[in-house]
Structure formats: structure tokens, C-alpha cells
Image (cartoon, rainbow, N blue to C red; front, side, top):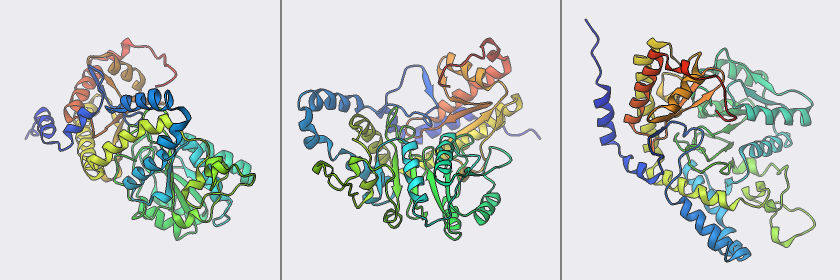
Length: 423
């Protein structure tokens, strides 16, 4: 008996028509003749951000100058932090927005290392984002004069939880893991691992960069003690948007900011000669807030809260499953391999595929009509990022149609292997 033929086009159109988040697509700027599947690297520009920035630049900075600190800017960081705290279900006194993800990881890892509450070692795994490992390596060398401990897995698809737990057993300490792996999109069981770490005198710092805005994350319910992350991906905060740091109130009392910046002072504008840290998460502030970046971030964060993270996650699962099934049925026979977990509850919001000619296939996608923009990760990965606030099911089908054509005709052979600075 022949297998039933699936009418993918009808399914995509039906789901687009029934999509409760469909109206949010019109709240973003869309380049013409472009399908964007790189929201897991840089989210789209929401409508209204340019107007807000113009107001900030022309009137607040241009006309009111320094007076705008009291009138508009001094409370901006707290206002934005409060909205992100609402999304992650923590109290505003435990989360702060600002600086970069690298700075935030340095702060919390270094601060925890100096509490002496945990064994003196930093640990990560082979799925973590490389930059996180750079930061941990530097701290390990400077603080412990020892290398960062690494848990190595046999492949990039998912973490070996037994190996990870075994390492926690034998090497308790301060761990740093990415909740969603940047390569495969694998999502860790956060609560299970937090509990396991706590029972073995360890703590996990979670990097939420590829998760926040698409996973329904309750940092309290999952018993998370520390987390960092960026806001320019699924939160659509714009290039270089500020990062965030969350520290559980109990842990917060035990740590000191290793970068004693003036905005972390209890009374920064008293200009006192001795440093006295603030009592809340504000003590982890460093320098002057990046006002323009905070203004740009606020709109995207508001859209996420308005849409509701549970609805966003539900659509993300539907779309990643749809995409996974399409790749399996139509692209695997043409040499594409799927590098993401088949289980939807173990995935973030991107599907990774691989091919020996991944880079030239990526270039072929970009040069077509419509131009399809995914991203490439060495040495063979193409990441297809799903941003539920603006990605349509029909977009995903068009991408598969185009990939099928590129692979079957070997159109990618028309392109060189030359790469720009950013891929």
C-alpha cells in the first residue's frame, strides 16, 4: 500500500488562517520579497521603535539635554527590567537589564566563585555557546589557576544527561549551561538539573539567550538560582540590545559585584569616596545605562507580553514540528540531515539541518526570489529560526520548496565558498 500523500500547502494555509497570533505579524517591519528565518540571531524591527528613538534623540536628547535624565531616563532601566521580570516570573528586585551577556556572565560567575559557597571550580559542557566558555576559561585561569572543567558529549544533537549528572556528582561546583543549544536547538530539562545540582552542592548559571521569548520559562518554578541572556533575538530588541542578569534573592545576599561600577552604588549621585553597594539586584549594575538600546528593546518586550508566552510557545512547537516533518519527508532523501531532537519538548524554536555544502546552499537561499535568510554555523549547519510573532506556516513551506529545488538541481554549485565577516 502506498503511503498517503500529505497536502502540506493546505495544512499551512489552514494553520495560518487559524493562527491566534497572526495579527502580530503586522506589528513588525518586513523587507519586501524576503522570508526571514534568522530571528534566533537578530529579531525583526517592531513598528514604533523608530518613532520612539526619534523622540528620544530629537526631543529628549536634542532639546532637553541633561534634564532628560530626571524626566525620562533614570527610571527607564527599572521599567524595562520589570517587564522582563514579569515574562520570566521573578520579582523586579532580582533581575536587571543592561550590559552585554559576556559581562553579565563574568559578573555572576566571578561573584559566585568568590562566595566560597560552592567547590572552587567552573564547569561547562560541549554544547555551550563558545563565548560563554571563553569567559569561564578566563575566570578559571585568573581565580583558580586551573582550567574550566568540560563535559564532552559524543555529538552536537543533545546533552547526555547521565554524563552531565555524573560530572556533577564527581565535580560539584558552579556550572554554566545554555538552556537551548545554539547549534541543535536542544532544550535542557531545567528544573530536573537545577534540583540535581542543588542536591550535590552545585549551582547552574543558565544562559537563556536562545530561549527567552519563545520558551515559557518560570525561573521560580524551575528553582533557577542564576540566569543571563540577551534580548536581540526572539525579544526583538535590536542589534546590540542589552543583556539581563537574574539572581535569586537568597543568592543575591551572598555575592558582591566584581565590577564595582557607579550605578551599582546605593547612592550613585552622592559621589561618595567609598563604595557602598545597593541592596537589591541594582548592586549588579555597572556603568551608565545605554538609553537608546533600552528604548529600542521596550517595544519588542511589550509585544511578547501582549501576545502571551504560552501562546508563543504553543505556536513555536507547532511550527517546528511542521518544519521537522517537511525536512524528513522531502529533504532527507536529497542528502539533508536533521540536527535537532525529534521530540518537541526537547527543542527550542529553531531546527538545524546539515549538509556538506551548507554554506553554498545558504548563499543560494539568499539569492533567490523571495530571498530566504537563515544562518550558517560551521562547519555544516543551517539554522532555520522560527519567530512565532511573525513567521507563517506558509513561509516554512516556501523555504522547503526552495531547498528541494536547490538540492535536486545542485544550484548551490553556482556559488563560491567565499564568506563575509558575518555568516
